[in-house]
Image (cartoon, rainbow, N blue to C red):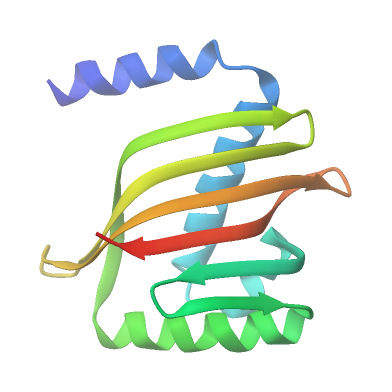
Length: 143
């Protein structure tokens, strides 16, 4: 059944508009870069100002250094929890314009033992800036 689901996802991807494909690839690249646990490796995926909304409130980043500091702390905490991967479900993408898109999904963070270490609803707003899709708003709320 998983093979059929993967095939259907690949077929659906082929028929998406190019902007949406680019955003999906960018999200996948960002996730892969994040797993290296090197804050500098993900900085290019953010545009300034960048807004992050979570259960703890709203943070607006106005510099790359602020983002690096925040991401470094997040990566440290995830390493401590033995974070290994994410499971995404209910993925949606909407292009608001040729330069703005929103992705939304449910996210389960999983540790090396395969146990859930966090469940979230997420929505990322992407803007095409300098020829690349970059995050401008990230919403991550526990579910």
